[in-house]
Image (cartoon, rainbow, N blue to C red):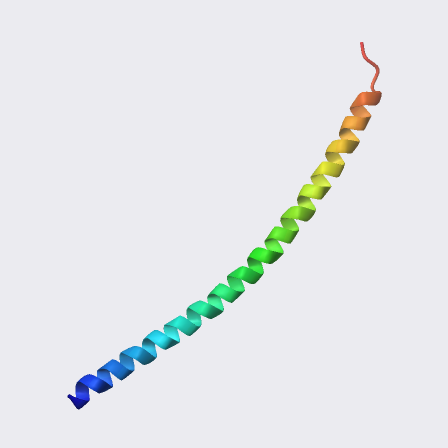
Amino acid sequence: MEEELTQLENRIEQIVTLCEGLKADNRELRSRLTKLEADNRAQADKLRLATDKLEGLLARLPQD
């Protein structure tokens, strides 16, 4: 009985350690996601500006 309780305790410790590791991974991934989303928004803004400039230049070209 004592051995079974020790095994159970060890297994619970392993699960707790795994859970803590997964929580840390999750925090890191959420942080990376937030940064990548901000980078994506910045790139989308740059693309919109470039598109607007290009459309402005195309509008000024003479029509043949």
